[in-house]
Amino acid sequence: MRYEKPAFAEGIPGALVLCGPGPAAPEAFLTFTRLAKPLEGKFVAVKDKAPDPRELAEATGVWWEFPEPPKGKVLDALKAAQARGATLGGNFPFTQTALKDGLLPDANAAIRYELPEGAALAIVGREVQLLGAVPVTIRLAATRFAPEERITLAGRKRLADLTALRRWSRQRTEPAFPPKKLATPSVPSGTLVIIGGGGMPQGLTQRFVELAGGPEKAIIAVIPISMPDPLPPKDGMAEALRRAGAKEVVEITGRTPEAVDKPEVLALLKRATGVWFGGGRQWRFVDAYENTKAAKLIHDVLKRGGVIGGSSAGASIQGEYMARGNPLGPEEIIAPGYERGLGFLPGMAIDQHFTQRNRFKDMELLIKTYPQLLGVGIDEATALIVQGSIAEITGRTRVNFYDAAKPGPESVPSGKKYDLATRKVVE
Image 1: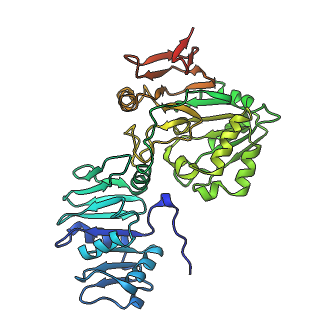
Image 2: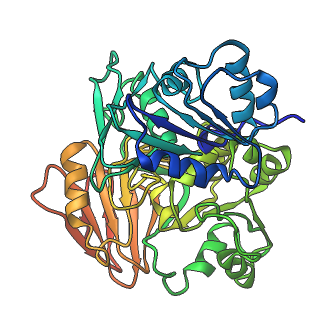
């Protein structure tokens, strides 16, 4: 049987439990047995001698305590077991091999995992979890563009995201993002509808359909994948757009670059007059759409005079800089590895649920870190409708604009307009 390699964003197949020198932490073997479920599959314990590779052919869990590291055909058999989704774990010689020989991708090169005596890690898919009380340091190697970075897992900070680490390490080999000089925020053609979550402003669904060409012409692609699986059988926004009279509404539910670049998806986007990004977590849009043909075609919707909209996560993805991209949670506004949005609105970072979740200090931090950006914090049930460089505020409350050259945010209420190019309220 052939096993498909997981997509980059999905992390590793199966699971790894890695240990530092000395006796393994009790949490390491307990976690291994929980993941490997030895009573439900074939469990192999390697203690007194290296196994015959054939013993590993059907293994669903392998725990390595032999003092010499796996090598040769045994290592090949372990890699095959991992590809099947097996759980592998063991002592420090096993861990050194796992880091050196590709069981954990990008390790010991761009990313170094330093496990001292008594330390342990579990890696399941894309989640990296500290086991026990001994801290583990993760180092990202210095590059031409960036100094060495250290991440320490200790205390309450026990998780890291493998995909974010790998993305960050690769992005550090390129010029810094965001660049010092950014394009002026503007939408030369078409319209952006950017909503702060917490419900749609009254009448905006109908207006979105009109911006997409009206009932006779509106062909709208709805992208709901910022929510985890399983997605509901009927997407609420798709249903609302149908009720508002759109001619055709199609949901795109692919979660990988390969899925969103399928011919039928590209054919739909070539016809689309509108695209809607749903709420949830914006990093999922990046995993699926970054550097794809589909993303280019969504940009083309604007160029044809169409409309792109989104709420909450679907708001943040529209900026050049993507706020709150950390896959582990939305608490941090800066998330290395997930800072690039899809860039429909250049030069901007967009945050949402702004006043309701008291995110003022977060945006201040972001603009202090990247003063070249124009920061935008949109309240719930409030929208920014952008044509050219003019942003119209509509809905329940207000939008806050952050310019590093000014002492504080400009709070602009519904009914007003703001010029993104001059960074001033339109009187």
